[in-house]
Length: 252
Image 1 (cartoon, rainbow, N blue to C red):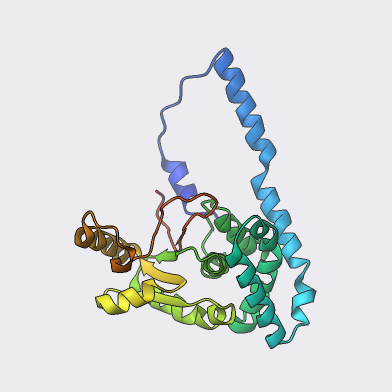
Image 2: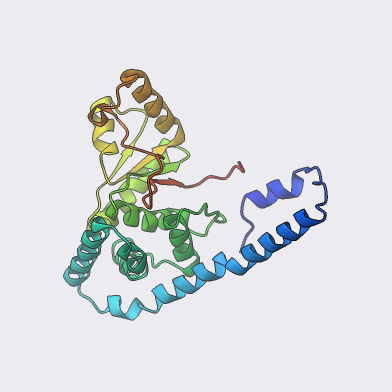
């Protein structure tokens, strides 16, 4: 596996050594370190990816109509929300994985499933070049779309925005989600329409510009019907908004 982009940054970054802890501070710090090591997040993600793959045969044997009906059932259950969403994530991703294989010709590998699970859980996931960020983001975006959380997939240029949205459109449609993209040449009506989709592909430049336009136009008014961009990055209990950074190769 090739190194992820931040490895180069870490090798060349100069850090001033922290002052060594002593006494009670050292004991507390050691206890915290043991707790984090015990969490084993990566191992948990790997185990969950294996559980998804173990359901492969069940969905491979389904006809397209049966698989799509199952996907729409998952979507309806996700939209009802609640604690059941946690138990549905693995079987739902198994069905989404099969949909991607049928519509895109790509069957997600364990590392891509781990990335999708991490994004759905609210983690920042870093992947090496060639590990399949486009598909990983698509898998996670379907779960966000089903949950009716505004999901913005942010990438580096307008070419990738249009290419990824159009390439993944049959997959999203099969899963019962609407996808759109926003590019620099679009006017306000077209932007409003595409921001209203379940999943929106956009560059960071356009996203920031539209966010600032909304703030300037609205001022103190907070009428959501007059915004270009739906609610984004506004914390709500148990329902984080979706923001996926795809193709980010600069360490931040």
